[in-house]
Image (cartoon, rainbow, N blue to C red; front, side, top):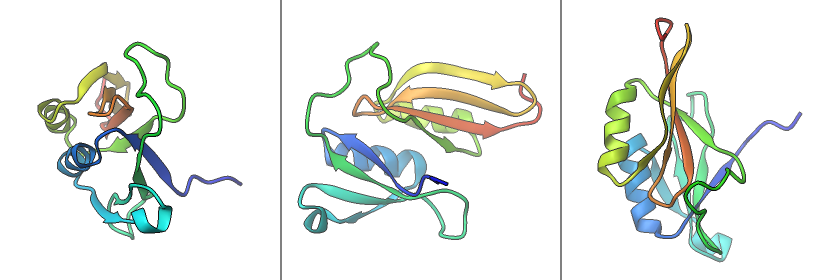
Length: 131
């Protein structure tokens, strides 16, 4: 079975992306650039005992996706405890709404955003009362 074990977010501005993901989601970063042979920062996304995976920010090697272009790759969704507070952080740090908050009835609140590097990311707040 092919379980996802790592992800990479392609970025134009490494420091800007580290600030965005660090401030919004509390991620921390380890410099793995020497090992990778290019700008590459491992992303620690939470406690080792918690469900989820770690990943990395990698220097983009081509043009960023253009607005309105269909997603070409995977969109990662992060679980959050307070959707509205996380959305406010995303917007205050330069992110943009891609698909506004909507209910997954009886399950959760979901929405999609563009990060500072024009990548699509999702946020998901479990809520049995969502409608």
